[in-house]
Image (tube, rainbow, N blue to C red; front, top):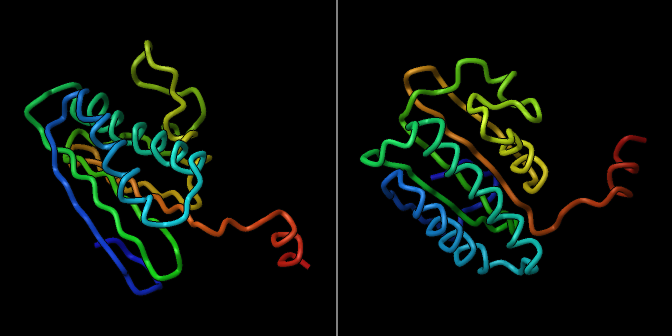
Length: 157
């Protein structure tokens, strides 16, 4: 289960093989699960992009396209109207996380290196836990009630 300060109302977890076809599966599963909240179609599209990037990273970078490995997608919805998602692999891990989080950085020259940027941009909260040789776990939250710029301004005063 994912960590949340609010009581969990629903949760799900699936495991699938690390093949490119399962990126689409992950997108559909998370969109279906997230639709329990009142997200707009645009919100759901952004959530799907973030999940696609996380699952693609697990397959391409974590497992280096080895198709006999497992990716785990977990999600929960809490009473505060938040969607919490994690994508986990037990692959090679990330050697330098600070570098990997930089826009346009990729260990694969043919890749654009914007996966983490999209995840950070499209989700309310984002965190990566990784250890070389042990795998990577990406945690993301999308809040139904996104704070506005006015709320940020009021909080900083």
